[in-house]
Image (cartoon, rainbow, N blue to C red; front, side, top):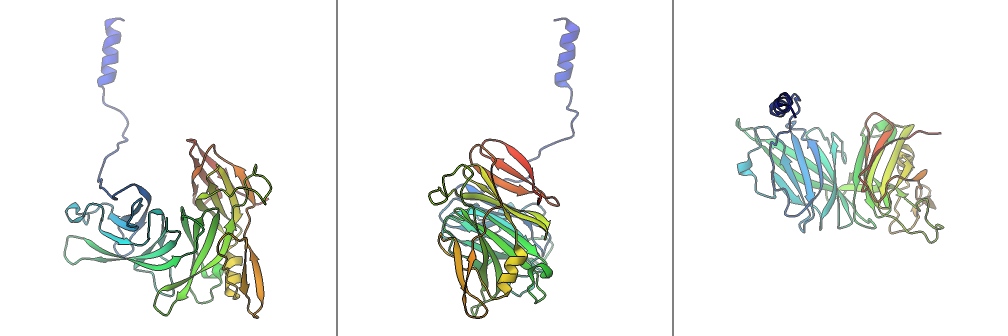
Length: 342
């Protein structure tokens, strides 16, 4: 190779990069005694700061809260593994965390509070309120309190995923001026739909189930009476208006399920005195209706069942403002999908 060519190569190697992209490590911290299995970031309403919530594979069942930046992050005051606040909320590993913001929960005012939902190895999900108080002085530190305000029991297995959606009063038909919040929680091959309806005598929130969604068989499974039930690993709410809203689930066998999100119908049934109260692995529920008679509510069945990935579907994610969603698989692929009514 001639000398000018060698000089040119050398100059190219030594020349500064022209890209302006940069990756800078700002903070890192040991946030659990074992693996971190669940996390989400929310805006704390009182201070407007971002806070990271984590849950791990450990024996203490704690949610830990971590401040993300700003001068109120003082690492000298953080205990390793505890963060700015931690509380035991489950009797086992926490598999899922999802944020709620600016909701009116149980008849109270939520202007100064933020909310989280968690799911656990102990087969329960729970709703938590996060209240923060700015300390006096100029250091900008924040004191945080985490309170469990409702528990969603009776799941058939580990709660691997939770999601939440807020509905306007018109859609929920609550009649008391409150927006309504629906919480989705996974138990084995079922998705439970819950809402908070009021206060108990001890001050805790009363949580009732609105509906239950059964994933049913996959496309190549044998007849329904003998099919193997495949666990749901992830769930997302796709769309956002009454006529175009779906609940999408990703399963361990690489398939997807799509359910029509019938929130208006489910709330109307609840407001008419018909709570859905199925437990265990049955496919229907019996309740006492307004006139004192027994009525039956069937589990919701998927409108679409389809193969999406080779191996498990590790996550499904909605694309805000659209009827599209993304599925991510153990096969290393991600796929963008579109939903529409025929």
